Image (cartoon, rainbow, N blue to C red):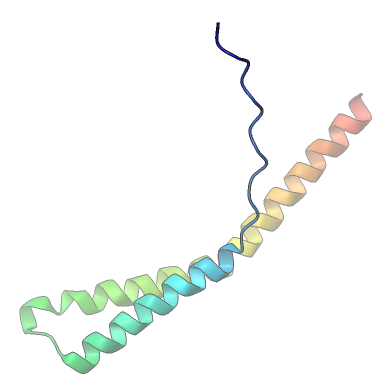
Length: 86
């Protein structure tokens, strides 16, 4: 017989905006390095990859706090409904 399963630990709190900022900075550094080094004409698409990484990272830095706030509001609403229903 197997022992009963222990409950899952609570989710770890992270700073997701800082993670997105670090990724955005990495893409920006890569873009600057590629601009300084120069690329052959067949490999210029790497500049677009780096630019897209920067743009997506900036969007993530803008969107993540709004997403987390919306999830917190939704969880508070659910807790309030559970409190009034019970």
